[in-house]
Length: 94
Image (cartoon, rainbow, N blue to C red):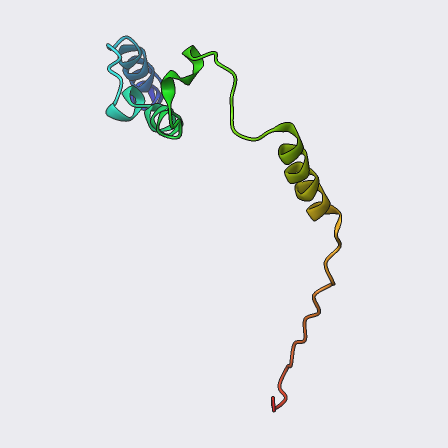
């Protein structure tokens, strides 16, 4: 009975106590955690130095830009016809 007590309680307790004091070495996965997200964000930026350039953006005048934006917003207002789906179950399709 006493051997069973040592085997079931004391030996696992000693094992966990000594393994808790070991030196922690991060795995390769933990060292590279977040690197892929940082690289993906960095690669999506076309011109990383753009934040240092404070000149105003040129290209479209106000009237042309307003017409484009109005057309863009109008595209959301148009309701498209409802798509109807027909499912033939077990019949012949001619």
